[in-house]
Image (cartoon, chains in turn orange, cyan):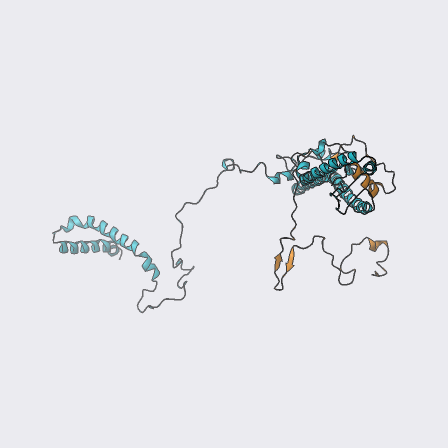
Amino acid sequence: MQPTRILQGMRYRKLRLTTKDVNKGFYKGTGTGTIGRHTKHGGYVIDWTKVRTYVCPPLADFKLTPFVTKNTQKVYGQYSDAQGPRSPALYLSRWKAENGLD
Amino acid sequence: MAPSGVIRPSMGAVIESCRAAQLGGAPLRLATRAPTAARPSHLTSQRAAAISTTASLLKRHKYEGARKTRDNNKHRGESAVRRTGPRWRSSVDSEPLPKPVPRDEVPPVETDPNHGLWDFFFDRKTVAQPPAADAAHGRAWMVEELRHKSWDDLHRLWWVCVKERNRIATATWERNKSKLGYGDVEATDRDRQVRLTMRGIKHTLTERFNAWEDARKLAEADPEINLSGAGNGTIYTPAEYLEEETFDETEALAAEESEEKTATEAEPAAASKATATATLDPAELPASSKSEGAAPRL
C-alpha cells in the first residue's frame, strides 16, 4: 500500500489502520472471533462449542497479589547463555535435574 | 307551576296508595296515610330506578321513531359542551389505592454476602476507596520473579489481577458518576502496575512455551532421552546409569527396578497433578521450587 504524499511520513504512521487504508479483503475485526455462523435468512446460529468460557481457578487460599512490596530489591536473572531464560538447553538441563519424569 | 310540581309526587303517591288499598281490599284514611305512604313509595321507585339504570343508560334513543338497530358509533351523543358524560359506565376498581411506605419502614433488601459480584468492590461499605488507599500499593512483579512460579500460580495470579482491575474500574466508574473530580491519578497508577504484572505473566508463559518447543527438538537428539515410547516407557535414562550397567549387572537390575517403580509411581502422580497443586499452598513454596509449567511436557 502506498499512502498519498500528504500522508507519507511520521504523521501517517501514527494513525491506526482502517479498511480505507488497504485494498479489499482486509478484515479488521476486534480480535474477538466468532461464536457461531450467519444463516442465509439473516439469522445467527450460536455454536456453543465456540462460545468462550473462562474458568476462574479457586482463589480462596491464594496469597499472591498483583503487587510486590517496594522493599524487595528487583531481581534480574543471571544467565550464562546468550539466549538467557529462552535457552532450550537450560530448559532441558533443568528438566533432567528435576527427576526427568513427565 | 311551582306548586303543582311540588304536589305532583305526593299526589302520585296518594293515587298509588289508593290503588294498593283497592287491590288489598283494606280501607285507608287518606289524610293520615298520605304523607307516610309517600316516602316508601318514593324510595321504592328510586330503588327500582337504581336497578334499571344500566338499561336506560345503554339505550339512549328513547324518542319516537328511534332506531332499533345498534348504532355503530359508540360515542354518539357524547358532548363536552353539553356535559353529557360518557355513554358507558367506566370500570373503577373498588380496591383502595395503595399508600407509599415510608423509607425507614421499608424492609432491607436481602443480599447474598458471598455473592461473586462483591469482588467488584474494595469494600462492602464504600463504592470507591479513597485516593490514599489507592496509592498504597507496591510495584509490579518482575518477569524474573514470575519465571520461578508454576503454571497454576501464574494462572491464579492472572485472575487476581483481573479482579483487581475490575475493582479499580468499578471505583473509577463510581467516581465519574459522582463527579468527584479526584482519585483518577492514583487509580491509573495502580491499574498500570497491575497491567505490568499481567504483561509479565504473558511474557513468562510465552517464553516458557517457546523454550519447551525448542527443548523438545533438542531432546530428540539427546542419547539420554527416549521419546519413542519404546522399552518400559522410561523417557529419561541418566548417562551415569548407562555407565554403571556395564560394570555391575546386579546393581543395574536393582536400579532398573527402582526406575520402574518411580515410573509407575509417576503415572498416578501425573494423573493427580491438578489436585495436588490445588491443595499445595503456592505462597509457601520456595521460589526456586520446580514449577508445573516449567516441567517439560514431553
